[in-house]
Length: 454
Ligand code: PFF
Image (tube, rainbow, N blue to C red; front, side, top):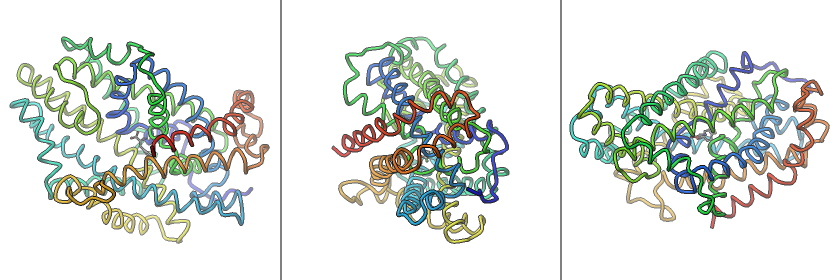
């Protein structure tokens, strides 16, 4: 296979920072901590680690094998590995999925930007706590403000992606991903030091296996998939820029480890503060944009400076996490346009920007003027989220694993995974990993697919 001349990540570290940046996102901050508390604390963390290691990592490896061997966008990679077959149509599936996700994910990115601006002006940490908790409701249901923030966030995503792999994505994620960790650790240390925070720590770590039922396992698996950005070709496309001498398995394990560690740190940054303020934890936007501003404002009464700094740190971290994820979705679409339609990167970025807005505007307005407009009982935003998380991502992940496990030749998979036998750890891991890819991962994905639909 002669790889075409293609940009490459400068090092294994750069590749890992880019994929970890894609993985670490809103899913880690507003879904993971809540799920942990709801499904048995430490018990859920154990279930999550099992799902990550035995299902999500093999799935990551499959996307990575296809991308690095195919050395193109999703369509081109499949076309190169299975010429003349219908597998290449996965390219359209992935690009469409990435397009829909980027359209609604950036809505939340816009909110983060809005809250960062508000926290910089001291708006969220001062004044009365009840006032702070209703800011979100007013902002999200408005028309102009969330639209402006959405466009700014989307343009920021586009500008980074327009720079290409080395000068855009690599340069940005190499700084931002480590920074994210530092910001969250600072926030976690502060949160744990608050009076009454120990109830929050207990909520997160106390293992209660009686609360970990079948639904808890399904949630752990679904969360592992979403959190590791699997199923829409983001890992595949990033891996197509990975150097041949880097290890795919190490990339998967590092990504899983950093993604999980970050999610746990985010849990410690959020839940102890929530409990310290005597509030019931929730999930989703309410946790991040209502509960936390309330807490920050409450702290602000006694310690205005500390509260103001912590508010900025927190929303900066959320914004950075959302950006490093949105650029990976954007890149899946850009690669598709560059390779399929032969446009240059700049033209593709501008065209995509315009097209995303067409779907993005109704997504933004789903919380305001278009709140009453429902399709299958869901707003445009909810429908996009539902279809992507439950259909596109799961079936995409299933296709990637079936392709590597059952369509590609075993020797080719082994060659790619072990760099032609040069990686001793991957050599040893190959047999069990391949077994999982064939026999465990596809049924597990089907299981989440069915349980999610039900
Ligand atoms: N992993 C991201 C999160 O946890 O928020 C979401 C995501 C990013 C999904 C990129 C899919 C993707 F391609």
